[in-house]
Image 1 (cartoon, rainbow, N blue to C red):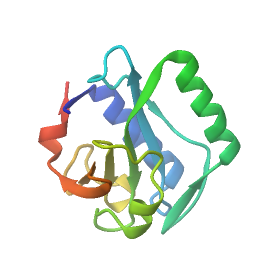
Image 2 (cartoon, one colour; image 1 turned 60 degrees about the vertical axis):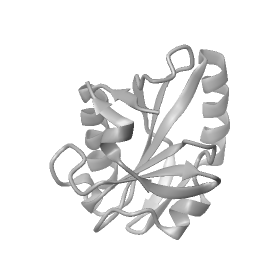
Image 3 (spheres, rainbow, N blue to C red; image 1 turned 180 degrees about the vertical axis):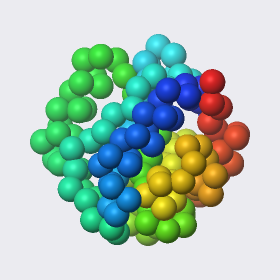
Image 4 (tube, helix red, strand yellow; image 1 turned 30 degrees about the vertical axis):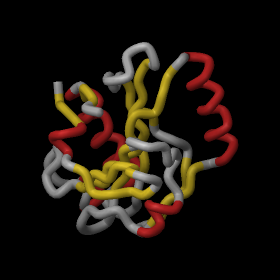
Length: 145
């Protein structure tokens, strides 16, 4: 599936990564959109989490409330996004702890704690295929609109 990603959502994502991670800690955001329009991303959500230079943990109570919000507002998670300190890749930890692991789910990793240019330069996208995360082409899955 190819998602329409508004420039404002991309810019807001980088702003959040930089504000939260301060160039020294990982950070996560989630891109969500209405279930009635499954190809559309409309919002960036910043989970409550603890973080370090090599990982993050989403708060369980926050996550429970978020699942309820998704159901109430008829929204779906389109992509999970997070930063890495150096190069972008999908680590074993990333593979083991995604927010979803359904077929076609996307996980985007932004390098250098998102301190570089806003966009997908050196980013890494993984897609769940047959139960495993596999590298995927960003242009085939995300279109900035």
